[in-house]
Amino acid sequence: MRDVTTAQPLDVQPTPLALLLLGREADPRSERGVECPGDLPSPSDPDLVARARAAKEKLGDRVFVLGHHYQRDEVIQFADVTGDSFKLARDAAARPEAEYIVFCGVHFMAESADILTTDAQAVVLPDLAAGCSMADMATAEQVAECWDVLTEAGVADQVVPVSYMNSSADIKAFTGKHGGTICTSSNAKRALEWAFEQGEKILFLPDQHLGRNTAVRDMGMSLEDCVLYNPHKPNGGLTAEQLRNAKMILWRGHCSVHGRFSVESVEDVRARMPGVNVLVHPECKHEVVAAADYVGSTEYIIKALEAAPAGSKWAIGTELNLVRRLANRFASEGKEIAFLDKTVCFCSTMNRIDLPHLVWTLESLAEGKLVNRIEVDPETEKYAKLALERMLALP
Image 1 (cartoon, rainbow, N blue to C red):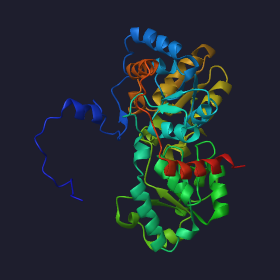
Image 2 (spheres, helix red, strand yellow):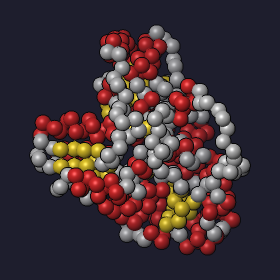
Image 3 (cartoon, rainbow, N blue to C red):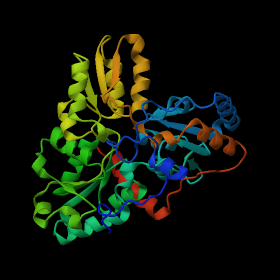
Image 4 (cartoon, one colour):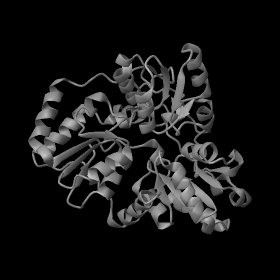
């Protein structure tokens, strides 16, 4: 691969399409998948609300709209159910009478819904550009090459893959083929415990931070038990000895939003809000998790704030749309809820699902036009479903 760090800069003006794909007003500290414009996008034309409502009413029970917690409010208002990615996929599977499943989330979530629903149902993603930077950090080709490296090191037969729900159908299928399971941020510990009953080592895909935090914080392993496999380096940047000594082989992937939070963010908010409780998602870096007061999944965060006493202060390290929604929800109870980072950032790929895209989708379906269908091929679906079923069978 050409070393782009030494290449001469080209005098090329970015096109509007390039600016759209790259994200306008990008914060240089942020990573792919994050925009930091200083505030959330302005609401869409209010006329679109009436159009969305009319199209949804016309479709009736034929459509079932799923809204991920990280969606903006103007989209969430039309969701029949809200939740995290796996809960929503299961909710879709529980509605076999719905002809159309409109998933207001990102691509890997819609894939999971297609895997778990019937062939008679069509899963639709309002904007096909709504991807996930973390899921994109592990491709089928890269993971197959990693398995070859493990085989050459003589450890593949000891390794059980555990893949985070936030992965593509291809990675879930790889996991199913190789005897592994899927996990969510809620059941990662149970998944790792199960995997260690099957083998001596775990290949954790694609989020290094959830894997490390679960192994070290929840299961008592040491940081030395973990090695980081970098798919962009020969042999993952690891020696055969390192692979033989490791218990956790972590894929070099991360959530671009949660990866922004730092120990400095924690220290700053403690200085600004004396008595604050810092609550972060386990996709945050290990040092941030160690500096926080509480750590848990999206559902854990919501329940913790529901149970929090009036007058308590909270700084939340997760996606901005959810934090703002929670802050508004609990303001009347005297709970002060702030975003952990001073710089306002949200997941730009999740925010591609806006009201204009939802209206176009619903109106198209109401007119009998099937748009933006997400379909997983039968072979991939077979093994991905096997991995998901192993997770469902966890004690």
